[in-house]
Amino acid sequence: MKPEHRQHRKIGPLTDRQYRLWVGMVCEADDHGRLVADPEQLRVTIWGYHRQVNAREVSRILASLAETGLIILYDVEGVPYAYFPSWTDHQRVDHPGKSRFPDPSRENSRSLASIPGGSRIKDQGSEGIKDHESAPLLATLSDAPTNGSVQFRTPVPILEALRRAPKLGAVVKLATPDYWQAELRANPGVDYPAEVLKAEAWLTSHPERHYKKLPAFLHNWLARADRLEA
Image 1 (cartoon, rainbow, N blue to C red):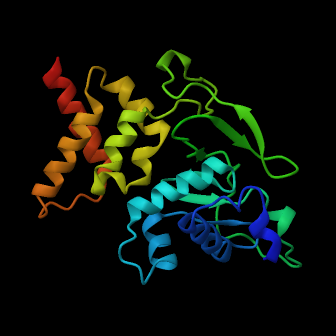
Image 2: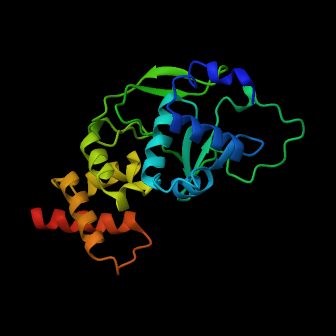
C-alpha cells in the first residue's frame, strides 16, 4: 500500500473506523480485489479485541464506504461480497491466482449498493469511480425498472427502524432495496418501521427461539400484519 494513499481525496476524509475497515478489507481481499463482506466476519477479523464494535455498526460502515465508491457491495446466492473497483489502478499482482470469490458481473449477482440519503450512484471508470445523479430516495413502485437494475431505494424510515433493531439490523439482506421492493409489493398498507420494531421486540422477548433465516421470519411477520390491516 503506497504511503500517499492517506492523502487520496476519498480516503483522507474517512473517519477512524471507516479507515480501519477499508485497510482491513484491502488486506483481506484476494488478487482480484474481492472478499466476503459479512459484517460479523469482518468484525471478528478487524475488531477482534474491541467488543464494543458490533456487526450492526460494521454494516453501517460498509454502507458508508460503498457510498464513497471505494468499494462495491454485491450478493451472490445470499452471500454478501465486496470488491474494490480501482484495484488494478492501485495494486500490482504479478501472477494473480484464480479468484475464490464470484465475479460481481456474473449473471446471478445482485447489487447491494443502497445509499442512505440517495445523493449519488457510483460506477466504475478509468479512475475507479464516476458520479451520476441518482433517483429520489423514496422511489415509487411505478418507477422501479423492469430490466433488473436496482434503482429503488429502501425508504429512510425503514432504515432508521433497522438501526434501532440490533438483531434485524445486523442482517445485511434486510437493508437491501430488492428485499423491501418485494415487501412493499406483497404487503401494501403495512406500517413497516413500526412492524420492524415490533418484530425486534418479539425476538428479544423470546431468546429461546433461534431463527436461522431472519429475512423469512420478517416476511411472515409483515404478511401477518398486512392481513390484520385488511
